[in-house]
Amino acid sequence: DQQVKQNSPSLSVQEGRISILNCDYTNSMFDYFLWYKKYPAEGPTFLISISSIKDKNEDGRFTVFLNKSAKHLSLHIVPSQPGDSAVYFCAASVNSGYSTLTFGKGTMLLVSP
Amino acid sequence: NAGVTQTPKFRVLKTGQSMTLLCAQDMNHEYMYWYRQDPGMGLRLIHYSVGEGTTAKGEVPDGYNVSRLKKQNFLLGLESAAPSQTSVYFCASSLTAPGTEAFFGQGTRLTVV
Image 1 (tube, each protein chain N blue to C red):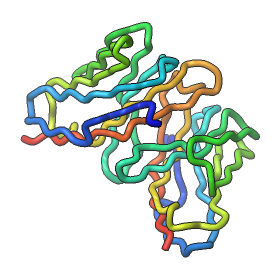
Image 2: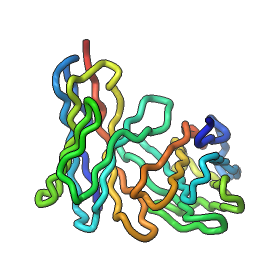
Image 3: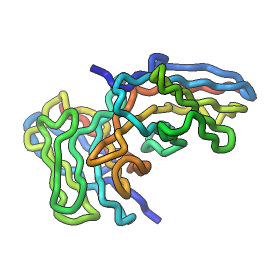
Image 4: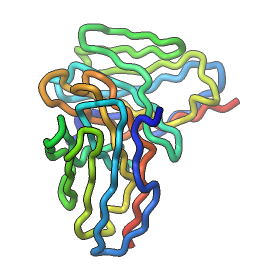
């Protein structure tokens, strides 16, 4: 039973436009959410996170929105750049005890010039 | 500034052979993790450790063993490799529980023939 779902395996966007990557979760105990970015032949790198006490977090071109009632979060990239082309993983955890990260299957973003 | 280093980066094993993957981190992190990444499956947790001398099972632990004899090292062992263990393996570490982000190594591509 997948607790973190990224239902779009891929997304294509033109350079300069907005990229929106979506993530849904089923475990209501999750209270911390992260996005990771992964280039081919490299390990994932942390991008941005959000705690359940917030509904928005911004870092430069990247903004994560959290809708707790819908158990949904999204990552917005504005403006998109070709260097953003990568696989994006959504992850969630319970921020207490010995919790671990649960990852979604990832969305491959392709930003074309 | 090495971060998380995995050894080896590539390996081909015959069915039934054994091997150990080494993960080393120089950030004095308490938590360490082993994940596997398979096409369409995202990142799945194999085993993890919350401190020196501790280990715990993750989502897909069968066929693997781990040890954390030193804080900076986390070893993943395959006692009798099977073709189903063909995957890309990622080690990660985090300072505390996953309320803080995890840092990943570059991965080990393992093929079992």
